[in-house]
Image (cartoon, rainbow, N blue to C red; front, side, top):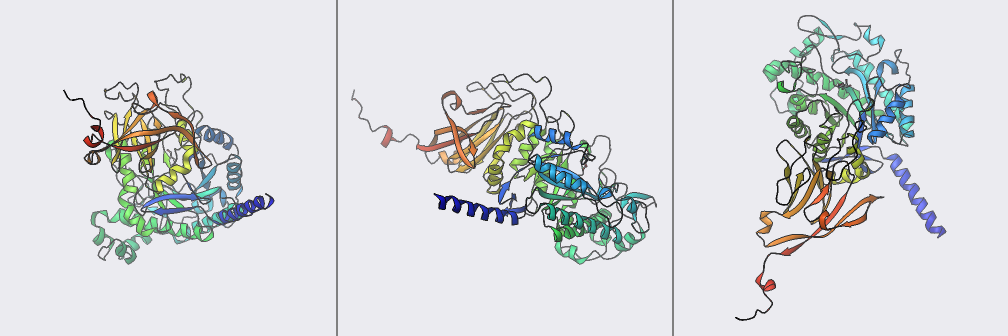
Amino acid sequence: MRNFVSAVLVSALGLFTLHAQELPRLEKKNDRFSLVVDGKPFLMLGGQIHNSSSWPTALPGAWRSLEAMHANTVEAPVYWQLMEPQHGTFDFKNVDLLITQAREHHMHLVLLWFGSWKNGQNHYVPDWVKSDLKTYPREITARGKVLDVMSPSGTATLEADKTAFAALLRHVREADSAQHTVIMVQVENESGSVGSVRDFSAEAQKRFDAPVPTDLTAKLTLRNGTWSQVFGADADESFEAYSTAHYINEVARAGKAEYALPMYCNVWIAYPVHALENRDRPSAGQGYPSGGPQQANIEIWKAAAPAIDALAPDFYSDDSTLFRQLLSQYGRPDNPVFIPETNFGSNFGRYFFYALGSGAIGFSPFGVDTPGRAEPPAGAPPAIPGQRRPASPAENFALLGPIQQQVAQWNLDGKLQTAVEEKGVARQTLHFGDTDAILSFGFPQGDGAFPPGTPDLQGRGLVAQLGPLEFFVTGFDVSVSFHLNEEATSHNEQIEILRAEEGQFVNGVWTPTRILNGDETDRGLNFHGGNQQYTGILFHRIPLYDPAIHDATPRLSR
Ligand code: DGJ
């Protein structure tokens, strides 16, 4: 017994050492991604705190909200202005506070580097950068206006940003490499230029008139020439995109040389006209920061910023078609899906499930620390069987939290799909080879009647195929049934339930709590809103009518 215990301890210690050495990293399998933390796939259920919340006075409220939200990760800013008050003097007090308190609250941490760019402007650069326009040049518009945007052609600014970012990553390595509280770093924030399609300063103009660097033309298989010759009408923004991406790549490289955490850039996307609230056109530098990694610039950014592991769109719109479009634009073999910011609101759960179905490594609403946002709406009536209580954003992470590791693994393995209710589409089918899962949204569902849907489109479900005829199912306001699809039924087979179990994963092992049957399975597996329920279901195949089997009993002759 003693030997056994010590053998277990030795191997546990061995594992600990191994995981202590293994940095958080992105793993790729068949064009799908997982964020791996301490050797295990990790689904980031995040919450981003407000811009001015990485402070001792604001953090207590933020932790309360994050816990109410069931988040497993906090995204929190690091302010260059505060971190390097004098050139070359660093102050990591607020960074240490974030790390220590994240640990106390059992959360991981994503640090957001508010450096040269914050929302297409320079508001977080230190005072000594802001006030020395000669050493740290600004962008100049075509009409000669000086912008509050750092010029991406400013070599001293780049050096200063690189040095500060490297110092941050060195500090995080020293403080955290044994514990991996910090799992990712965002390099700058919504970069690009607000105020001009590109920088027209003398230095930028010189670069603009020169040939496009051949590393870019080669990667994009374009002919060589000046920016105008190669990119025509898109020359200005393409130049800005390359300059910005190249700059930020250098910053990321300097950081990774100290501590090679996964790094991403969040994106202020180009919203189409119909999704813009107060703007009449989505023009570069006006409707969105020109040159940032918006949809049309993905190729340039991928080519010019290989040190950036993910371009990650922020999403602030109610247009779910646009959201799905973004998931497919940013979900590429060279780019994991990651949503680092969204608004709260009635689409929260729907977008989260869409993201999961696209293999997202994480999802994080913005401004989680606004009091009352994460919790159920005040005065929410108690759950009434068959009816839905008002949706709470927190119910999503509450459901996914206990299965986050499984979900991350299933996504990496390509086993998981989701369906989300859309207006007028109260039933959807997911295809798993020859088996279909049919998801019907809203209750009550009468026999033979079409599902009613929900008034606020809150039906959403997740199905993972764990074996040829074995599935894991969960969701909200949805009933899920299975059948063989037409192709399979032409082979004279059908499926029936062998066993359906409600249960949970305990230390990674499926642990049933009861067997479901009768009303709980006959018309589908039912997941009412607000309930936290996971179901495993196993089918077997039986032949369709076969005279050799079904007519084997002798009949009475008449
Ligand atoms: C997007 C930015 O990335 C955030 O820092 C914050 O400013 C939000 N917009 C505010 O809506």
